[in-house]
Image 1 (cartoon, rainbow, N blue to C red):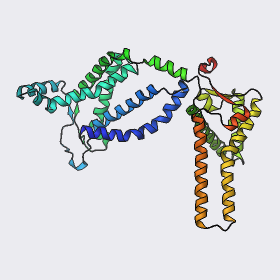
Image 2: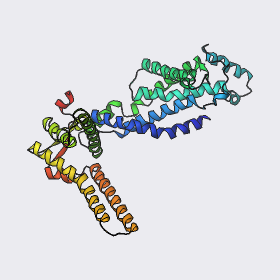
Image 3: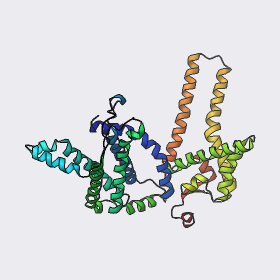
Image 4: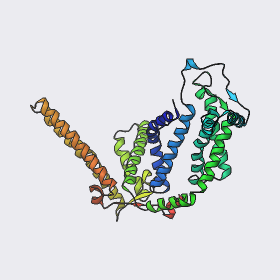
Length: 364
């Protein structure tokens, strides 16, 4: 597998790792800033892609187990050997292109180039000084070299690549170059502080995606809460009890905040009678999202079972119903993303506001 093939494989793997990273990333951004800054997303996800590429370039190509030479050397511990190799190639080469085509030269250049972005990211976004950049560049290089020395964490019976102390030196040098190269551009780019300020300013408004995230987070926490209480008490109608506790009693006590909305720095406010409005809102949400679509489906199925309808017509009716339910939920999701108030919020006169900048909230 060539360098380009390793990078291609990294791009194919990137969506799967990004999917796993997205949920904690979104939760953290909303908790800290109340918004998700587009530039931050570009920087963070490009950094993830970069790290994946570096890792895959270090471990690929993966050899067949039977092709590994069990007697091959595993370490090269003499520092600066690459300098003598380059000098030798300079003496033997007839022109500069022959020098550049030598593995001892292009491997060094490639390793330097591979670590330059690491130094740039560390200085620009992670705000690291030169000392930290050198240390982190060395540690990343050491991690890759140990990965090779252990035969990909002992998956292989013998290392299939050489642990080379020169790689530690060259990779760390590349990180240092990246640090100084970023110094040429850092003043022309938005600073980390400016990104944070912009994020906090955006977070003063509750976006549709933030509301949707709150909906999903609260649903997950309520499900865990319900499961724990059911295991402990084995109470009938435990779902009704936990719904009342989580969505009515808790936000009544904590100023319109469920656990999810508190973490995401937002609250649901009412003009008066908070407990009564929360109670009716819960009933309306259940009626709207569960009873309405699935109750209608029950009536359809009950009518089908009690009527003499052809199989084709049954298939058409069920298909239309499933599509209608899907459109119903997607339409409501679209309304949330557009920050539109849904019917149950308008009925109880509830509105989500951001607690970003709230002193009492920030102190917590």
